[in-house]
Image (cartoon, rainbow, N blue to C red; front, top):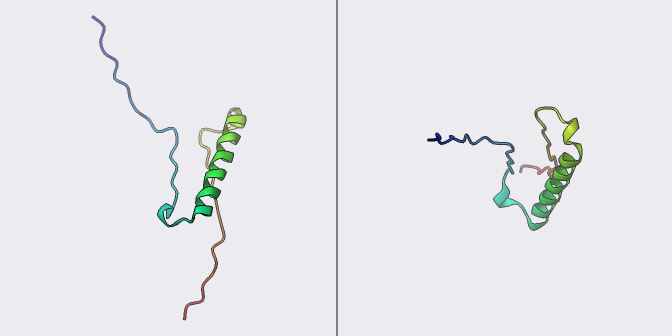
Length: 67
């Protein structure tokens, strides 16, 4: 009789999008395109990566004068 193997689930990747519900249609498309670009880069350069790969999408927000 063979014992059942217990499988352990581990996270390989976590994606966090801040204020996703507030993004415009253009913002959503921009983030999605950027994620596709990152995915392609990881596929093409996986052998060169260290144990942790981090990509950050940074944008400039319009400053607003407080009255």
